[in-house]
Length: 509
Image (cartoon, helix red, strand yellow):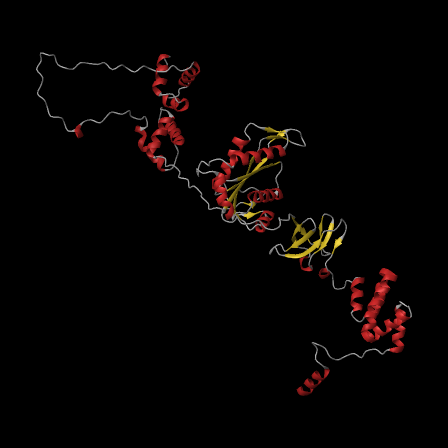
């Protein structure tokens, strides 16, 4: 027997004094029970086993040997005696409790309290294990075709000095792993949000040079708002970004992270190999280290499961990736606003009009860098789009204006110019000379067109231009003396002529 160290001997003797069984000490320390027993007997903590006395049962040489007897039937020979468990006397009770699905701890507690059991818990555990043998849980290995799947997850990076506090903190480690080749993209960030989560995906797509068909992710808030077994609700920004790249998201079931075991393994490999025990002064330094390590070691390693080099497998997978879109995704904020009684919503102290049917209702608002879009809250279809404006300003679409709203001067000029070139020159000249106060004059010109007709007004504007007079009074006096008012026409596109009603009434008499 090899001599154990003093520390190991003290450990064994200390556990024996605590009342631990030899089997339990063997499981905890790794030493054989014979070794444990020898030290326990030497210390007086265990009783020594009685030595077997060798007795010579052979007869004396001068005694004749008895006649040889045929061997007895082997079936009739007694079985080898084995030690009897302390739980054997309580077998009916234990079998009944095991049938109810109770565990060994509960059974042991009931035996001590109600059945006078004085044995050890480990004996109960072994007895229950024999009655209900444990069936190992078989796990399926998920294999994917080239370009079919990418798995993403967050972990913790190495300690890095924070630029604001100056203290060492662990940033978030983003890892994206291709399901077939196990080639991975790794980057650390200080903070996370829906936009940062999407940007990390885009950087991974650019690093791989293509896009996979599906993405398997955990139920973190940046990707999944409402985790559900059958109908998970994705983050709207994340879902729109994936739609831009034509990728389908496959969130894992709640509390089932093993469905994305490849990226879980990649996170652990990165933490335990690339970042273990390291400290960085800046996060850029850590990302540069990760990129070098990824290209030098992770990309050239022989994968333990596939038994192939990751680089060679990626060469097979890259042609199967879908090409990147021509433009990157344009990020925006997703808000909810109520349409005020004036038909506008408020975003960043600026006001934008919505269709009148949404007055008083909540709408979804997407705010980009240069635009703002108003979406229907139920169909998610865009109902209005505006350019961003400054604080305190308003953006109002013409379709959203009330019917009684006066037309703008530009619209009045365009409307008058349709009746003739001279009318257009008169209207533009009046606006240039009088500015905003010319609006009432232009309304008067439109009234003259209604009363005297466009030809007469066009002729009056030509005369006003020759006389260099840009006054409404000049046009009105000229038309009063040189034109006649139009006769009301009895025809209408909807209402029939008066003779039709007359003939109908006469036929009824």
